[in-house]
Amino acid sequence: MSAAWLPAFVIGVAFGWALERGGMGDACKLAGQFQLRDLAVFKIMFSAVLTAMLGGFWLARVGWIDLNAVALPPTAPLAQLAGGALFGVGFVVAGLCPGTSCVAAVSGRFDGLAAVLGMGAGVLLFAEAWNGLEGLYGTDRYVTIPEALGLPYGLVVGLVTGAALVAFAAAERIEARRGRVVQP
Amino acid sequence: MTPGASGPRPYADPYVAGVGLGLVLLASFVFAGRGLGASGAFGRVAAETVAAVAPEHAAARPPLAGYLADGAAQNGSPDAPSGAAPPGAPLSPSGWLVVEMLGVLVGGFASAVLAGRFRPGVTRGEGVGVSSRLSMAAAGGVAMGVGALLARGCTSGLALTGGALLAPGAWIFIASAFGAGYVAAPLVRGAWR
Amino acid sequence: MTGVHRGLVAAAAVLGVAALAAGDPLPGGGGRVGAVVAAAGERVPTLGAVELARRLRDRTPGLRVADLRDSASFALFRLPGSERIDLPTLLDEAPPAGPETLVLVDEGLDAAAAWPILRAGGRDAVVLDGGVNAWITQILSPVLPAFADSALTARFAEVSDLSRYFGGEPRVAEAGEAVTTPWALADTASLESHVERLRARGGCGW
Image (tube, rainbow over all chains, first blue to last red; front, side, top):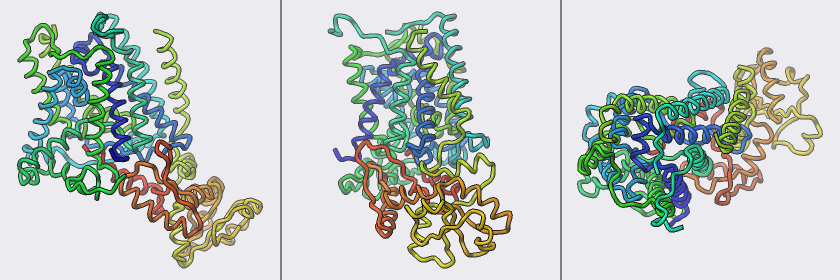
């Protein structure tokens, strides 16, 4: 294995490990999220976003990393609104997402394997339907929320942190009211 | 402890697992200069598969051709179709994702086995049979495949990575995906009883 | 709520509240001019250390490098071909707006503060982004991350040539060593366009 492969592979192993430890490869977890019984998926996702956002901001703020050199996912509002909606329906029907379906598959779950194969078919379907979708696809823009709103980056980081903590408290209340179903 | 005797161990606390996942994402920012991803690996593998069977068909489909050009454009990338890369040459963006997802398979498998959670079978509620559950998973996969390519990413590459980097598109995607998920949830509620 | 949860909430709250007042991440790691300017709400034209090095090496006509630091610092270390100018005499020394470029050098703060004064006097100047420190880190000791893509590697080759020309020692980082690559940002005069160019390169491979 050449040097270029190693970091990608190691990061992938850690990624797969973290997903499995949190139970993200279990379709019941995601079903519980959408039936408001077990909000672990929400808690994991947002604590991960919060950790990486705060960590990235502070490492950049003290000058250890250059946040501008980290590849920023593009923004294309209409395509992401439409693609997100389609993705969300698939998400709840499959009970898995692209990353977690792979974890499900290697945990021996055949529904994970079915979702993986379905995803491959979806890629091909997208390619065949490209002529019809090109207009909706639009063009990439690379911008951050602080840039778009003209606010200091740290202010947005602080506001997102506050919103996430409030949302975590709300999630605990919802679970307590609906009766948490603890998945083994 | 023997997993067989004690049964599968419970999953980690979600907040602890989430912070762990966030630290993996942060490590990716620092050491790879990019975030995590999953759907791009599916795109690359699907494109390479089509190209192996019907190269002209793949070349005529811009989304597939884009993934194929990705490896080739990274002049001499180890994952380029030509394969002739100098030692230590960098990976193309989608090649990076393919290697990363191979790692996910290994890491997920190791974690499941060590926690006694590797159980061949189908995860389903009582309200649905095995074949229906597999059809649902596959159909959901198709919708996610199209949705992720249209949105330029999935839960990993767009929602987590873009969410942490404060990309507006990531937050649009999160709101749209969860919103649509909650609208569709009652339709599949019976399957999870 | 367990003790672990309390700890995580406390950590997030402290970092989040502190971030409210922390402003923006430093552009280019070592470059502090952008942050200062953002705070002042005014944009000072900056020149990256790499671009300055290229212009110095190519002996670009009309280029003057003015060092605003005190004479002791200047004696200790100076940029090639630079002259020391005291802040009070700056207005007399600075060229009127025109093709001649006066580059202001210091640790970053004074030069950015001096620029509005110059402009109010109808003079033209740009500020070396990151000051003397940027020259030292980007030109005298640039570091290529262990896992760099081909674009970054190609850029590093150019920067290495410049570095050796000025007696620097470019090197490749150890695996796992966290490095910043401000030299990759610095090939145009405007900080904004560096960011845009990087973002346009973006490409996560979806």
